[in-house]
Length: 118
Image (cartoon, rainbow, N blue to C red; front, side, top):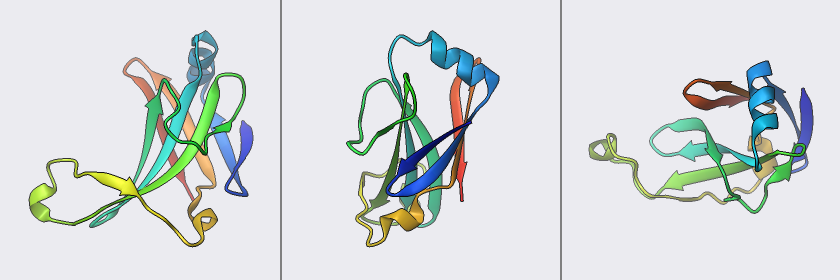
């Protein structure tokens, strides 16, 4: 288990044995983005990238970097439910209040999986 600080808040990072093994076998850094998506409903999603997409990424060891990214859509139409609407950054007053407390990462045959929570 690792612990990092994002937005002045501690985040506990748990990796399964499979995730630890996959991470050590990587050539480059794995960038993990915890996306909190505000639209008609709120969705939590963990995204995995091979390059840095968020400037607020925090190093969690040699080959792991983690970021928190709240986003929103400009509209909430049921007709758009099947398609992914355009997202934009969601500016928050007290962003640190929305930073998750934990993140779990795993690696399976299908690739990286993750979840986060409060």
